[in-house]
Length: 403
Image (cartoon, rainbow, N blue to C red; front, side, top):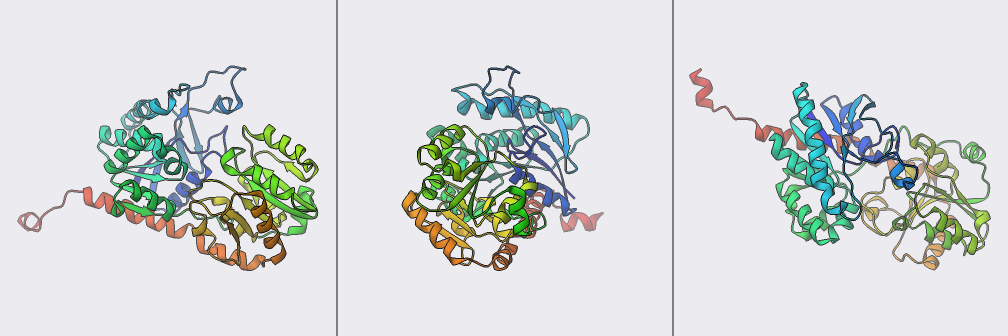
């Protein structure tokens, strides 16, 4: 049995049930194999309970210090996140908070053989420091914006490269992320690509008519899911449907751009065709996928966008920008389209083409079934086993015979 310590700031909690859900999904499938156990340390920022705090900070108020999800024990130590200097101070602050928490766990009898960290900055930097302190090997998983965005900043990039060199192994969720890291100078031999899978039981085709009735929609409807931030391109979806007639848009997610996006829809005269539905739990998403004629993902940057797999597992065609790992997911025109230009005209034209093709939902589901979690879980177990085997003392043949 492999005993892991999962370390990441990207993990759901009682107050933020969808935060970092992609990490939880990967870990829960790994533990379900029966060949590994883990304790999760998922630090959260220390935030005073003040009414004047922005919503983004208030969501951290009330996160429990410890909790259990899916049979896995979670610990949420607090780390200091200071305005303006947090980008530089966060790795050390994370390390100090996690070291204190982990030291207490070790004293209470919690044993672990390997630190499995997710997200390079600041999480991966802190994980390497933890590995040094507790004398444990460390793996770091790159997930997207840590490599595609944060690594563009000079100091974080230096620290990311230092952590990659110090890590026993690096994991990426797409070949594109591996290529990016190798272009920075990280050894390709150290990197293992282990893509995210999709839960084929949760995300499955359902009755489309019933799903549309439950949501209350009719007519041609597109779906855009993700945080309401510029990177996700919800504004492009609104501008594109403004060029189409009788096409509606559902937006699932929340974030700081909501007011701006609502105003954009109003200014373009499509506010009656755009519905903002807020954040929804994963269990509710299959209805939205089933109800939609297509999912659109118009991001400027992505690692391995799970929403594409979730939609296809529900039999729903997809339209995505050709960025990051999306070309590794959408490899057939039988499941959707990729658009290279993040421009409303090009996107609207691609939407029209996709809708006119009326792709078969059963064929799309069959395509998605290639992306089960089994391959990823097997890859993790193989990697972790290899690392731990290499660390164990080797007893010589002569010594064994002498005994």
